[in-house]
Image (cartoon, rainbow, N blue to C red; front, side, top):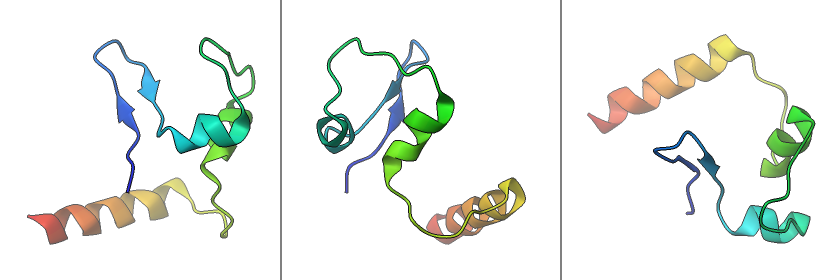
Amino acid sequence: MEKTRLSSKGQIVLPTAIPAARKWKPGQEQTRLDAAIGSAGYKGPRRSLRAMERALLREARKRR
């Protein structure tokens, strides 16, 4: 499974499959946040921030 990471310069580094699927070129900019975030391909129901935080905490506890 590929991972998205945050660089030391604060840049988000996407898995290669995402820009390839969107036919993005190096240096291309996204002006709309939903255009960039929507690239992940999630098709399920929307989740609240609170629900996402709870899920992250559950997973973190499992991995300890």
